[in-house]
Image (cartoon, rainbow, N blue to C red; front, side, top):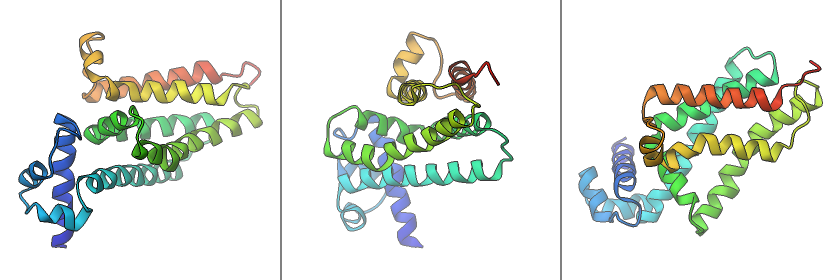
Length: 204
C-alpha cells in the first residue's frame, strides 16, 4: 500500500513537471523533490525518468480504454451514431480530466522518437480501430453514407487533439480557454456536429 502511494506521488509530480517545463527540462531530482521522496525510489520503482514517462502514458491509455468500454457498455445505445456520440463524449471528457498528461502525450507524439512509435503502435491504432469499427458497421447497415473512414477519423481526432497540442493558439487566437469545462462541452458538441454532417445518409 505504501509503495503504491509512493508511486502515485511520483507519477503525479512527474506529470505536473513534464507539463510545466517539458520532459527534457525536468530532472529526476526535481521529480523526487516535488513528490517528497528519496531520488533513489524513482530508479527503484520506474528504472528512471524514461520509465516514469512510459508508465504515465500506459496508465493513461489503460484507464481510457476501460472508461470507454464501461460507458459504451452501460448505455442503452440504439444506433451506431449514438455509440459514436458517446465515444466522442468519453474521449473529450477524459482528455479534459487528464489535461496535463494529454498535452504531454500530444507533444511526445509530435516528435519522431522510439517512444512515439511505440505509443502509436500499441495505443493510437487501438483508438483508431475502436472508432473505425463503429463507422464501418454504420456504413454496412446503411445508417451512414459511404465515406473514406481514414479521412474522417483524421479530421475527428485532429479536432479533439488540437487544443491540447496548441493551447496557447486556442487562447490567444480564438479567445477560448481550452482548460475550462465549457470548452470541453463545446468541443463535444462541435465533434458531434461534424460527425452528423459527414455521416448523414439522406436515404435513411
